[in-house]
Structure formats: structure tokens, C-alpha cells
Length: 536
Image (tube, rainbow, N blue to C red; front, top):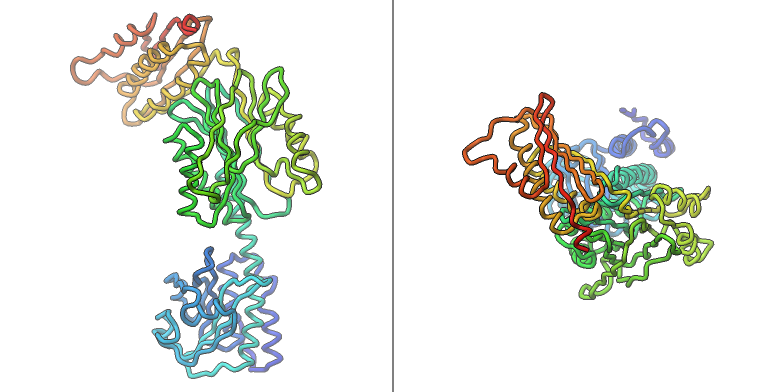
């Protein structure tokens, strides 16, 4: 959008400075906006080049973001350390600067002297007292920028800074919101033996914070739940939250003790995120589902609701948040007994903290409303009671899990891709479901082998390169369990010699094995009388 240059008139230049930003720019992105603004600034100052450099997230480097007349700065992603060279000194001192000789002694960016610039004038970009970066203009001749040029460039910089800050704030808020939405599970896991429900609500009229929750099953058959809150707001807090979430998932695969997960997370945070701090509540269910292991890092205790008993806050040791306190301080794990039908509620402080009431009142209200019912209904009741029709000032995350009773666990149906990697998922799902369905230790061992053989046969024989799916349906009838393993493929002949022993193994481990082949696929039905009740 070229801007015609009027005769050099002080009053006219001032009017043009006042019009540096206008409503025609409202639809532009941050980069497009800055490019248009520096183009207008170059015209107003009648300079040959104009460049805007913005501070990066660390506040330690300037990054060339928009430039006219010397676009190479942006294309090469020029970065200048605060305090170094011409632009770096302006960012450090927050004062205008002029140089009449552009060479390695005065600037650190070789692009400037290689371009042939002879003089530079730069001013800080400051909006509402917050440094944003540097704006500078340059000349290819021996022009001496005077005090009037400094005044006009600073006026322009003030308007550029306000426009950029507004656009960056909106952009950061949108990015933080997108990060938050992408990291909160779109769908909670379907874990045998448990029902789960969750809520996330942003605070009213404020930046996105670092509140989050996560839930996932582990190969060991355990269920992992976590709720956390990163100190801070905006995009930076959301990004730290995302990295913490990923780190927690990685450590959870290697440790069954939530205190050890938090200890390793704390070590990671101290090394890679030295300025970050977060509170977390981590809970890991034993494969038997009878117990849950809880560790708190500066976080509010969960609420436990059991059948025929009042709901209460879990009594558990509260260790320091991750990122603060002593790195050598031991973290604690609390064991909670979970009977069938019991509900555990994890949450962040935005659910219970209100400016006009003590925290204890919010915790008491939460304890009163939690009951051992379906998690979706419990979440709805909690939000109706604690949030109602009043927007919260802070973000909140809520995660509710209910251990199903034996009556809820008569059937299990799921499907996986017919690939070798799915065998681990099948074993994990069976380890979670079989004990709840009445299988004893020996039963579980036998069925893991028998079902594994049936599934492996499907993976090897049922499909060609195009692949397919493997379906499993488990159902109990009294003390007898039926397992149906099915596919929709056309079986290939066995490869190699001495094959076919899988069926023989299945028959030795189960009371009955039936195989049916047809044009629609193959099904294997396994029946086994469970001895779990006899072992108790």
C-alpha cells in the first residue's frame, strides 16, 4: 500500500504520523500489520529503510519481524542480543540512538553495512510501560538525523507499539486458547472398570492460564489421572503446560509410583524450565482397581465419594509444587482404598476459589455436592452448584472417575488394528478388565496367552497388505467367561512348517474352543470357567 510523500513540512509530517495506524489495518496479521506500519514510517521520515525488531519470548533477543528497503533482515531471521550493537543497545537502554557511520564497530548485523547504509536512527518500542522491541530507519547517504527526526520517529514508534501490542495480545490469546483446546483430551479413554467425565472452563475476561487435566491407560493395566495448574497466564503458561503434560505421560510409562513421576518431572522442570512452577495431583490405579496411589505437588486434595458414606477431602501429604523448594526433598504417596461405585474428583483451584469467600467454604461446598454416581452427572452437579450462573475469574479443570461395580462389568467389547503392535494394547485391556470380571490370577495368565494366540493368528493370517481390524467381545455368564475374537478377512495358508500349534495351546488353556470360517471372516470362541471366586 504505497503512501505518497508530501513536501517536507513539519505540521504535515506530524499529521501523517498521527495517521500511521488507521481502521484499514484491522484485518491484518501481526507481520502484515508491522510491514505496513514500517512502510508508512519510512515514508514519513523520508528514509531508505525501516525495520521493526521485536523481543522474543525470553526477552533477551531482538528478532527482525518487518522491514522495507532491507527485507533481508526478515528473510534471514536476524537476531540481535539485547545490549549488543546498535539495536541491542537501544533495547537495553530504552533510549533513542543515532549513528553516522555504519560498520562492524557500530552494528552487529552485517546486512546493514553490506546494503550500503551510511546512517541510522532508532528508538525503542514501548507500550504501556512494557518494552516490545526497536524501530529504526536508515539512509543510504550521509544524512544526519536531527532532533526533529528523533521526535517524529518516537511518535511513530509509540503508535506502532500500541498497535503491535494489541495485535500480539489478541494473537497470543488466540494461540493460547488453541493450545489449551488441543491439549485437553478431546475424548476421555475407554478403560475397562472405570467411567470418566471432565470439564474445562476458561476464566471470564482473562488470559488463558495453565490449568489442565489428563487421563490415560498404561500398558501395565493401570489408569493414570492428573490435574495441574501452571503458575502464570497467557501463551507462555499454556506452552509450559503442554510440555509438562507430555513429560508426565513419558514418565508415567516408566513408573507406577506417582511420587516418582513427580520427582522426575521436578528435575526436568528445574533443568529445562527454570522459571516455571506448577501444582499437580497425580493418581495411579492399581490393576486390581482396589487401590489408588496419590501424590500431590502443592495441589488441592481430591474429593472421595464412597457408597453409604459422606464425601470427604482425601487426607494426603502435600509436597512442594514442581520447580520450587528443595530438589532433594522426598515426595510422598498416599494409598486410597477404592470400593466398587466409589468416585474420585480431581480439580484445579479455579473451581473452589472465590475472591469473596474463604477457600474452606469452596472446599466444603465441593465435598457436599460430590456423590458416588455416574461421573457425567457428578460433573454436571458440581458445575451447577459451584459455578452456577456466575462466571469464574480463573480457569478451572475438573476430572471425575468412578470405579464400576462388578454388576457393571459383565461385558467388554473393543477393536484394534490387526498389527503386531496391537497385542500390547489387548493385553493391557484384559489385565484391567479380567480381575473386575471375577478372574483370578491363574485365569488372567491363561487368558492372556489364549487370547493372545487367537489375536496373533488374525494378525498373521486374516489380512493382506491393506490390513484390517480385529474385534474382541468378552462376556461373563455366572462363573463362565466367553471370549470372541473375530475378523473380516480371508485367511492365508500358514507359512513355514510346524505351524498351527496356537489352536492346540488355546484348547489346553480353555474349557472349549470353537473356530468358524466363512465368507465374512473368521471367529474364535473361547470358553473358560473362572476360578477366581474359588481362590478367594
